[in-house]
Amino acid sequence: MRHLLLLPLIASGADLRLATFQADVTPPLGTPLCFALVKPGVEVVDPLTARGVILTGNGAPVVLVAVDWLGISNEAHDAWRRALAQAAGTTPDRVTVHVLHQHDAPGHDDTASRITRNAGLPDAVQHDRFMADAVQLTAASVRVATHRLQPVTHAGTAAARVERVASNRRILGPDEKVKYVRYSSSRIPEAIAAPEGTVDPELVAIAFWNDAKPLAVLTYYATHPQSHYGQGGISWEFPGMARQAREQSTGVAHIHFNGASGNVAAGKYNNGDPENRAVLASRMQAGMAAAFASIRKTPVTAADLHWNTVPVALPLRGTLSSGTLSQTVSDPNAKLADRLRAARDLAWVERIGKGHKITLSRLRVGPAEAIHLPGELFIEYQLGARALRPGKALGVAAYGDLGPGYIGTQIAYSQGGYETGIVSRTAPEVEGVLTAAIRNLME
Image (cartoon, rainbow, N blue to C red; front, side, top):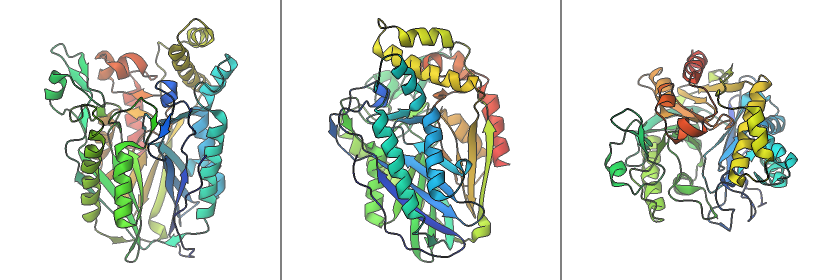
């Protein structure tokens, strides 16, 4: 575990206040990455961080955090929210925890880890001790930040296009079935030549000021964040590079959230060559700079801080059977990857069996608005939410609780493809359920 990183903050008694926090959550070498689906960590290319903001003023404090990890799922997601809530003096329903979904990074799923440990596979999905330490380290950074709150006098939001990064992963053939899945990189000429497809080309920025001094910038953009991965090089990837460059050039704390990018990646514009990581980062950085530069500051007070939540029960995919999954997890002759994937599926089945609901949340501070959603959502959910705010810049953060995995549209389940044809844990009816919940949240 690396040392704690804190940004310098000044205590204040203002009604509407903000503090930023940051903790180093880089895993030790040998840690499973991508839920053990790729090579374990052999070198640290970039340190991984958990960074966020605390807002106080109207009701209990609100905490937003984005982590440079693959995923935080199920009981682990609960543990993060409880720990950060306790540290900030608030309640878990006013804490939202997201990941950026880098694949050369660890995943945290205490439920799946318990299942594999009971099957004789300790530390297979994750290193439990490191995960627990990372939660506590982040909570400690939140606790310190609560004593360094600064006044917020202005807020604002704007959007700008990001060019030649995002492309839709799913390319349909003449039969309206998925012909190619254009992953984070592609060398298939037909896939590269295919249209960009359905994406959200805009990056949204939300910023807060104390008079003339910018305090924090939050950005939102939807794409899988991989340029190349799988060789054990722990990395925050091109979104982390863009975020770091902006933070260094402006001196302002920068927190980035991944949008609904379950079916969006850089495959049209990236062939997987290592040098493309910097190219994609520069394009994303340009979008971040353009969005921030176009923000119009609006005066705000504590009364302008609003937070609301909606619980939603996501329908379970009918092909998932707890008995079959338990047999696979316990089968010593099965492939390790199959056993670990079955454990993660079983973890979600257990959660649904206990009546678990996921909390959707919405933050508003004057003109700035963002919503917080679970799983690997398809981009259509983000576009649908933004359509409810025509002409406005709405921040959409997905990759909250990653327990449900990919969440497709109803038609996508009949089209095949990796996301909905193989690994999604939700049923096709999820679109109607989740769309209604988002509409309810935003009303």
